[in-house]
Length: 467
Image (cartoon, rainbow, N blue to C red; front, side):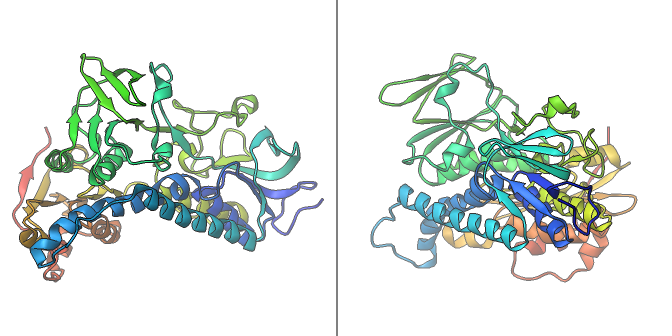
């Protein structure tokens, strides 16, 4: 078989073979096919990857569900009377979520097929620099280039005593019933978001975290605001604690033994202690592909591994583990390799959100990192009660923070805590990506009444000098 117009090597079945049907792999396959490449993609599980199937999308659907409890409570302050108490139905929510995920998965498959991508719904392994072995069919496929986009998987300590008694975020989406008591181990995005979900749905929730404060790496004010809000919601947060053992209790209950002797009983114990690259069984070591400290594939700025014909994008590399990053990288790879186009990707000014309740939106540098890069900072912080909370009688607070380089007056960081934080920060990220200065924020006319107007009306600064 000869190659197409993109100039691949003779007797290759495809110009590009993608292993992994998640966000990065799907985008790379579709764009490469649009450039005229003959493309195949193998996915052993469900199309859409972590984000669509067991990550961002179903998680946010559950976040929405968990917030209705506050909405019902707030309604009375605005004149609404609920004649009967609201009743929540977990199986009904999960069924609705499953229908939506199935719909999205179908769209992913249709998008690939419509682009002319050949799909293999089975496990694929690297068999050589230009060869892929398909496990179920036993078929061997040759390709000019191979892209690994297999993403990441939840990590649970391999030597944890009672490991068989815990679940991960993958399993949380398929629980048969809503647990009455839950222990979540971890203090990052996933742990914090699921704690908010289950607590909002009525589960007695406890976070166990080995660090001194949740959300390591985030701005300190954001960390403090969220911890205070979560404690006010009744979420128990145990920091500087490690799990020694998990054992089965009576009537399907679990018992968590902390190293300091504390014992916690729960219906479900969920580990959310990070994710690792999904590389097991791919055949990387047999080909001599260089991997990093946690198994990630080491790539250069063109996404090429130590084997020149094999590339990688997304969470299987050491790039930021965010869906938009994987998509952007997959697109850039396809443009470069199959259309000769170069695209610069800036990993510095990447906006992100924690869909806690209240939520966090952030872009740029937290204060402690900004202090390392700038000679001096001007820090602007505003804390206030959102308008909706006044009639609702809720003591909820919002926090907004701008971090400014005093010399250049460029805005280095924008951090928002409160309702719709993610929506605000996405728009702020555009201005900051363009090099906005504090004076640009100041000259922008406020939109009143809105919470976001605080970003353009803050004038009182707290001067910070690095130590």
